[in-house]
Image (cartoon, rainbow, N blue to C red; front, side, top):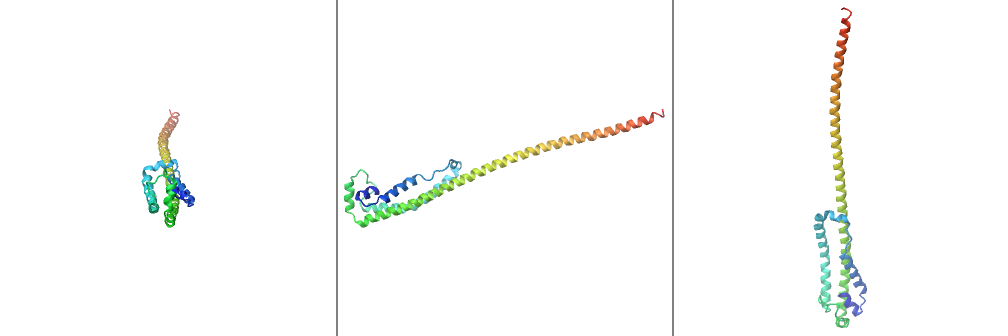
Length: 197
């Protein structure tokens, strides 16, 4: 509404309205979030919503002042683009330059607020992306640790089995050595008695 009125009056507010239009467009589409954001949606979204709500409250005062100053020059929320530019121009011509200047001043200040808001929103979403990346990294590290633990447990199980097998072989060899020694002793005793017979 500000753009239509001021352009019709030829007040040179193209710059302000242009920036307002640009910022409103960019604010409606903040920095695109990466696909990883969905990973922690349930946890992060409430935090982001509270942060965004707080940021939006910063510009509520500026928006109110703009609406009030527009009402002073006869432009309300019911003013539509279908109204002829000549009617708006006539209304502005009956308005003091001070009131029009106030509208432009409030609009410029609101544009600056929106620029800061856009930057704040960008930082919020960057923070959300960073948190998601940290979660992804932590999850990957946790999976690696679990895999390492599984491999360690498997190695311990195999080592235990090998130790049991080695113990069984040692026991078997010990028995075999005792038998061999007994057989040798028995064989030696028999050969010594033969000449006497």
